[in-house]
Amino acid sequence: MGRSSFPRRQQYRRLRQAARSGAAAIAVGVLAIIAAGAHAPEVAFALVFAMIGLGLDSRRWLVLAGRSRVGARSEDEVQRTLARLEAEGWRLRHSLRWRGHGDIDSIAITPTGLGFAIETKTRTHGDGHAARVREQAAWLSLRRRRWCKRGALPVVCLARRRGVEHVEAGVLVVSIDRLTSALRTAAGLRDRPGFMR
Image 1 (cartoon, rainbow, N blue to C red):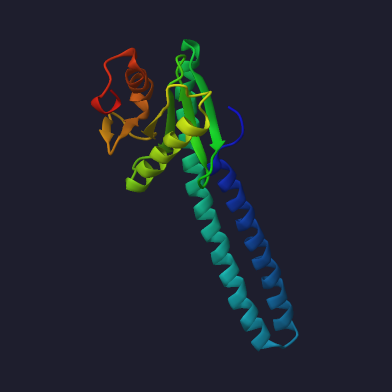
Image 2: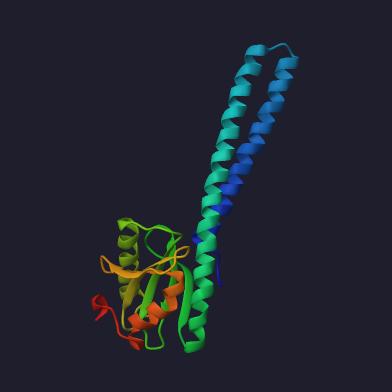
């Protein structure tokens, strides 16, 4: 599946930060015990507060890492679903760096050169996600012309939803169970939605 996804890399970064804060909390806790044993209660008290702060910071990073893990799993599911198209001659790319923040989650390219920039979301999406994937599709059409000879279209895929398929603000919004059939339709292998004609 190529290089790891942005959320997976983010998850690992956040876990490392949680480990650093946790280790620092333990070290400060040991110093607090030493200070208490040396009859320095004011120092021990200050160190206990620092230990609590570092512990809370570690917990916050763990929660954020958990969110990133959910996003990474969603991207993995979308990649597995898209892999079915390879037998039909489609080309796939994942986690492509681009000029914006992060990466393009997935790119599916038809045998005839029409590309799809796919933004993976777990259950919901907003206007910002639609704007981002439209920007990514425009970037692909302009900067990756040899891949996407016929341009690129924006897609938001909802990995933990079912039965969703509609066009919203010029973006195809589709649940994972309808992803491959919706892409085939948008590619002209079936009747295409109005915004793609």
